[in-house]
Picture (cartoon, rainbow over the protein chains, first blue to last red):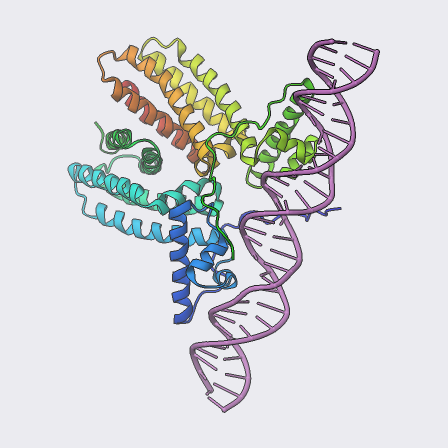
Length: 213
Length: 213
DNA sequence: TGAGAAATGTGAGAAATCCTCACATTTGCA
DNA sequence: TGCAAATGTGAGGATTTCTCACATTTCTCA
């Protein structure tokens, strides 16, 4: 009896706020919603996060929630977007002044450590980037972020190795970056000692690739 | 008014069949269920897979489905388990006869290509390992699988570099393996040309790490 | 063989959750 | 002040997972 509609919409590429808050009041409420979501994700993971609970914790009605976020994924996406913006700034700053191989070694190593600590300390970030593969919009955000970050690396590499093939550098940087994220995810899902070893191994491996020998 | 129960069960570590099929009849039906699930995952992804649809396609009632699979995740898990079993056998075979560095280079390179093709060709495998991070049971299965596969590599490495620190080798192999999976996932989510470049870059990087320079 | 036990099969519906919508309230502004 | 736009509300529609009481089939063994 059930008539299946022609095609289901599937996942929309980008989930933007249904309506952006223009008044001070609503801007504050949206902040509360995001804060509530963040707390809940930290406690139980984004999958277990319930829209009703987010609304309750934020002290708003479920309807208000949907006024600004078209669906559940949009909330996670909004949080993810903030993280990427923050971390991109951080990465750009770290790689900005790199002039030679030793600079790069230092900066990269530091960056990896920062990321490692961030992943260990931020359950929300961890959770969001974990679910990344299952959600098209998130995956695309992550890929875009990764490319942007790789770009910073490419800029540095071009200075250090001006004669290398640009496409080659591009590929290397992108791969190294993505593997870094994979290494972080891996490192936090094993015990601390092994995690540290894995991060160290990744650093060696990445640097060997980036600066040679 | 709602009373929140003490603690929700969260994700169970291992989802084993509620009841294993002992009669020929039910074994065949379970096969049909898995086949139906596999088809649906290939078509729309495991997230969009509906239990009712699986039952319908398998020609069984929804109740029968739940007789053998405690929940939806268990079906995906069962499929994942098959893939790991198959691929482990394949990997073991490929690395079995490796005697020197050149053997390893050849075998590893071939293995990576096989995986790459597999990821490109098998939407189900792709989907399952994509969702891997969001599901504890799947993540653990993947980690265990990865460790097992890394073991094969370690065995080879110990023969090639008997004087190296075993823990070091262990870490390297595990990392290299996990990064391979990350590289595969990455490679299939960009266009073909870039994917090929990334896979090639990964190969270089991994081999440099495994056999040195 | 046949009767009782065990295994298997069924589908209505309970429970949980996401999201909508018609209507109420507040704010901005001329 | 008064109207329009923005914002707020929560009951309930729609969907989906999973349960359970009962029906049917297969197995076992005297």
